[in-house]
Image (cartoon, rainbow, N blue to C red; front, side, top):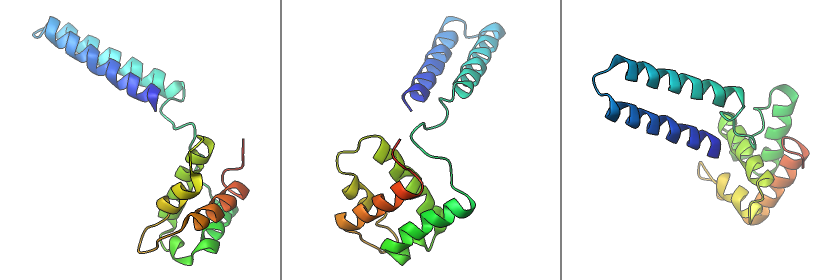
Length: 137
């Protein structure tokens, strides 16, 4: 995320500098386009465009296991399966990122669609996610 933000700032800075130094020149516009393309390509090639803490979206049996772990805590959480899987992937990022209180974070992240979870529920979600989508690295 920091690398992506830095790339965007660099692109914007290059654009401002190019525009202010030579407003009427086509070569300034071409240089800016080239710089943007090169920065974008370098960012993508280095993997910076991906969130390194976010696991890939689960499919097949892995997806079923993740949904079952979430459903085990509260069946209403998997009504929208895509939303539940996205919340699980984001929770993995928090677990691997050293969140201060991951159980509370899970409870808040999964409290949606009229379901309000406790920190204990969040702990059970984290246990299920560690067994399925995001084992400790």
